[in-house]
Length: 123
Image (cartoon, rainbow, N blue to C red; front, side):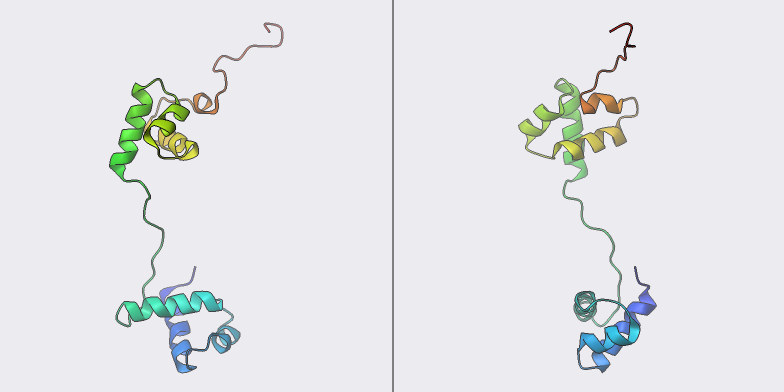
C-alpha cells in the first residue's frame, strides 16, 4: 500500500515523462506499470485529485445475508439445502456468516463433524 503522497509523486512524474511508465518505475522503484496507469486513470476521472480506494463492494446485501441465515435456522440448519434453495451464497460464505452472526453456534456443526466425542474405549 502506498500513501497519498507517494501516489501523487508517481502520477506527477508519469505526466512529466509523457505518460511513460518505465522511467517512473525506474526512478521511484514503485509501482508497476499497470498500477501506475490505473492510478493515473483514477486521477483523471476524479477531476485531477489523487484518491485511495480500498476494499470492494459486498456481493450480497445485508438483507440477503439475514434472509439466508434465517432460512438456514428455520429449515433444519442444513447449509447445502439453504444454498441449493436460495441459489446463493456458496457454502463457505454462508458458514462464515453463520459463525459471525450466531454466537452459540458451534463450528463443528458446519463441518459435518460429530458433536459428541467418544474415547477409544467407548467406541
